[in-house]
Amino acid sequence: MNTIKIIKASGEKVLFERDKLIASLINAGASKVITHKITDDIEASLHENITTKEIYRTAFKELYKHSRAVASRYKLKRAIMELGPTGYPFEKFVGELLKHQGYRVKVGVIVQGNCVQHEVDVVAEKDNKHFMIECKFHNSVNIKCNVKVPLYIQSRFLDVEKQWVKKSGHEHKFHQGWVVTNTRFTKDAIQYGNCIGLKLLSWDFPEKGSLRELIGISGLYPITCLNTLKKSEKQKLIEKNIVLCKHLCATPEVLNEINISENRRKNILEDAYQLCSNVILN
Image (cartoon, rainbow, N blue to C red; front, side):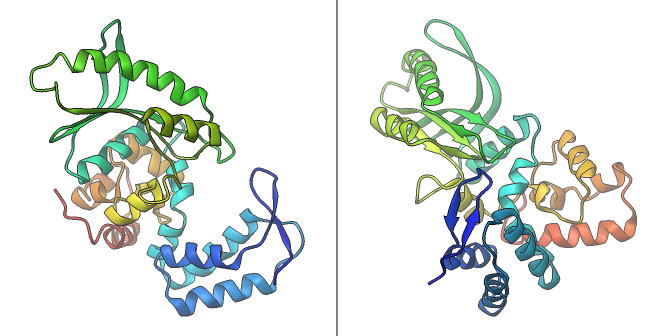
């Protein structure tokens, strides 16, 4: 049994778990042969107090040699953080995930509550469901949403809900407030959310239907996953509302607008098409 401790980004020391590394590589689409080779090599090179960042870099470098697309999926968590520094691209990203599930979505809207108006990140509606969604984007994995966040969002939602139920046809609709974050919630935040019926969605919560799982199922990868794009180019595309690889696949001419050479365009689009190959362009 491995007894070597590694250092997480938070500074916490934990035992290295081979199964977790294997799962992350398999989830990215790596073959079993490549997965076990990378895992064996990393395990053989472990030393006390190695960081998770070092392990990630080694795994990513090896994956990249075999498949740029798999390496892109492997960096998903970091890619979502690259959607910053503002939270608006993340709000659009969340909206796209809900659109993929058939919801009618509005992003960045003013909603009238019973007492006051509220600026709401995302409003989603389908059948008898009507959601008010607050997106909490963080630039660091160490920042968690504590209980103050769902407390605040629930109070806003209750004010909005009082107004919504007055609308014709809304008397029997299921209204719910959501908090979506790209990092994690504290235990108290999860306990409170579960207690009052507020939907919480984070990178790894809930166990079934987490943000990571929804992205994997939908195939809606952010353009920040693309390793063939420079950071400055990703930001230029985001400014043009190109948030998903799907958007880039649908409008490849946008690469001309940010002065990317023909040779590089070929590689960028090849990677983008591989990432969104299971998404129906619309």
